[in-house]
Image 1 (tube, helix red, strand yellow):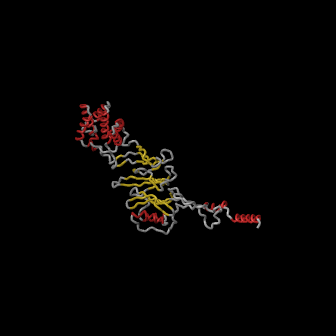
Image 2 (cartoon, one colour; image 1 turned 45 degrees about the vertical axis):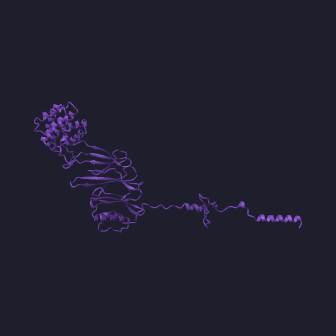
Image 3 (cartoon, rainbow, N blue to C red; image 1 turned 135 degrees about the horizontal axis):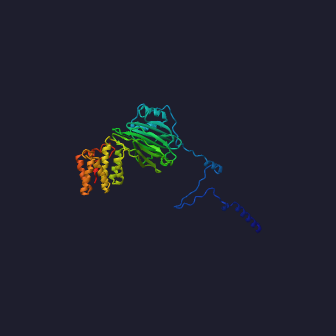
Length: 432
């Protein structure tokens, strides 16, 4: 073979070999390669799904992520079952709440609950009741309110629906009587109703009072809470009024009873519980002007005990001379007038006020027979004599105490005004 033929053959062989050889520079893996395992390094890689020819279609992926998420109806209630009935015999008190809740959870109706509670004697025409028309949580489904009395306990029970179940939300037992609903409005502009309710209690002596709460739903806590910060108790049920004109209601406790033989005369007026942004707090108490003479005496004596003589003096003057004041007891216009003059003499003497001379003169001129007058006339005159001799208030009180020891009615006459009145003893009559 010639040299040229050999060269031609070699070139052909090289061409064939180069065509059969794979070009490493054009290799493209179909999935990421796993890196070499190195201690402390996190290995990550994606594995393609098997036999998923549509997996690379963008429309398929968009449809998958765009499917609507099913939203659970958290407030859905059980389907009503009018055939269900509560037992004819009332369960024990410890099981009463759970029995009622379970009945409602099984689909029992509110009508059936009220009918049975009446049969059990737990609600009547003038106490207790049921309601299912108040949406207290603002979630679109009314709550169930049960008010009843059993075994010396008056109960307000609030139940609500949650994920197809009925659960108890709030329970309050204020007194032995079933609570009464006062109002169910948005009192504090929170967007949700506030349930104000109260119940009355009476002791063995027939003295009665009301206790109250205000229940509201707090979504951030997921439960009902009582918005009245301290124990609310008053002789009359509360009212909800916007007395400040700011669209926020205040809880008002009005006391309008003049009193009776047991309590004695009572001051009328009102106390305000005001909204502070979180709860209702006791704000102010405003009393009406005193109606009875003994009420002025009590207010003056309280100021005297606090050494607020500038407040006590005009009150003693009123008690002695104001004809418009009414008498709680028939002899108040005589007994309390002399007591007011006596205390006025003490107050002026403490202040070394020259007007004390005029008061001592009134005791002498208006009651010439001190022994026949109420004891406070004689106490005042003896105090004055002791003060003139010693120029010492304590010595003057010593002389007044001698009269008290001889005429014990000096204390008793002031302790005739009921169990709400302050209690007097000899030391309170002359405290110097």
